[in-house]
Length: 253
Image (cartoon, rainbow, N blue to C red; front, top):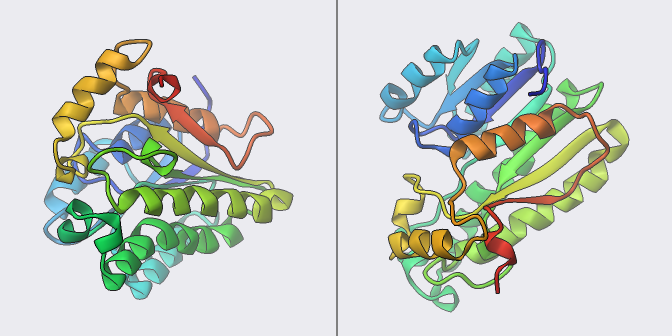
């Protein structure tokens, strides 16, 4: 597909073998990239470590993006082992259940701030750490959803949060473009991941997407991974875009 031999890629957000981040990690590794894979905490490690080891990840480390010390430790290890970073893949989002399942206008200030911090600002924090390790350019990617652009029933506060993530992507792309660092948002249609299971009536959304999409098929984590590998190749002059990977679902009225 795309030769990424010699590239170094950090993948943040693997929770299990259904994760979008895992699909991206598989694709990046299949094209030759060396991987650093993170897991959230001790409870998540038994699910993530075997997957990372099977992919031959050079670095497997804990990362709670709210923990500045863990971020510093991770990037110190990347610097000491690799001395550079070519690709950053950020695939994490969070909202408290009460805020996610309630009306947007009822979302607490603390809950809104927490969702924004973990889902949006953490991407910027990681980009800032990655920037010095990309002196010859690189690729930074995050994961959004169509709820950023229009109202998706039961998506709640994550709609405004993802809209902010897409805006942050554009601004970061503009700021880092002169350094040859591209910044992208991948926007799959509905996918049956653990994170999505927290959205009310998500199965109905999946069924509707499959029926209405021009291809009549949902995107897979392999589809997203293939697109991520394409972007990581840096074989073209594109940045700051939201890339729809949804079988055409987003074009249907």
